[in-house]
Image (tube, rainbow, N blue to C red; front, side):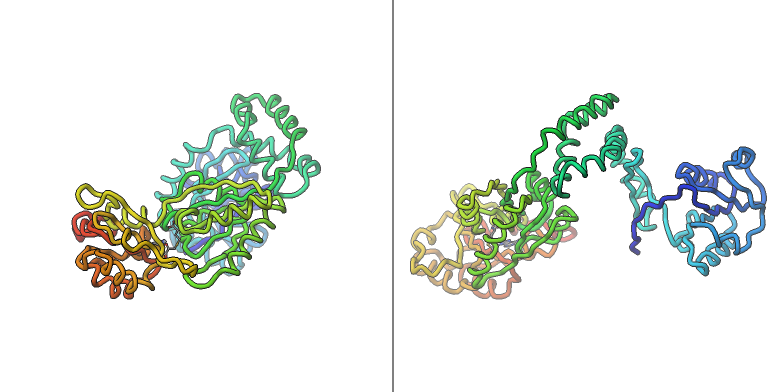
Length: 460
Ligand code: SAH
């Protein structure tokens, strides 16, 4: 079940509440707090309801419910202990196309009320879509501790200044930057201390000094797939981005962390000819940054490991665009760790070499003698299509045909799979392996049998 989240403005709107006991009282209180005109259907009123009725806070319609009572109300809350009665109200609401919530009865609700973190105008709603209110409340408690109490006050001040700022700073992006800088500045501390006047002085000072910033490009590594392997810098960058250029290796879990209203541009590709596409990407990066946008070029793994990040940085440098580079966990580190294969291990491997199986057609041959040395781990990116040739060359240059190997597919993702074997079987393993896949050649590959852990629950 998926609900569409909205915050309703109930000020001066009529709401029908069925029931006038303890549970209804809580509902009535929050409806009154929201400024609703509460009409109550109930045979008897409890003490609090009676008081509200006497003070004119609510209108008591008596104990009889008739469907016409729904005609001019905005929404309905059924909070009686009589299930059949609640159902009658819900059915009547449905027939009239009115929103109805029945307390603690998920199937009699056309809207549900979320758990709320309330900071004045800033409200954070948490809902489990009716599946587990306890889980929603647990998360509300956690968020409650994360959002400082003065956040509401900051929102109030922002509300007061919003239209003025709009008239002074042109462009949504610039305004967003102004507010973000402000909320991260002394303004926050001053508001926390309750010194609204000083906070507003700070705001005006920052407004005077505000200069639209130039665009920049962040070349960020997204890691091999598991969103938990993103660095804090990369997370901050994608959450502040105006535009994110991402390639096919960036997982859905990571894309879910990108700022919602950022423009997301797929420059996806897998092994093959993509020279023109790369030039187009370079051109777009420059173009977007020149518009003053904060651009993130998000790449699988690390941008500087077989990621063409260097070429993109050169283009930016030549165009005079400011850039930053955020490293990521490259597949050779991430996929092997999740496969239980240490890249170096005493007695097995004193060094590790990362090579690409998809070398440029510039005629140069890799130094096979070096690649075939024993006691080292060879990690081959983009190599499954060339596995037969690589195997043949390594054996021809002295690597034992019985060297342990592993082919890791979709490393660090829930669908990770690993095929283990010996060098002589590498071509068959590589052919079977789903992509993206990384080939690991070396004695360390055999350690997986002992050290595997990821996705092994219940198997070990
Ligand atoms: N910049 C990336 C590498 C890009 S080249 C990095 O640092 O990881 C693309 C190759 O990386 C793929 O062909 C595959 O060999 C490897 N690769 C990337 N992600 C992978 C993953 N999750 N599992 C296995 N191999 C992966």
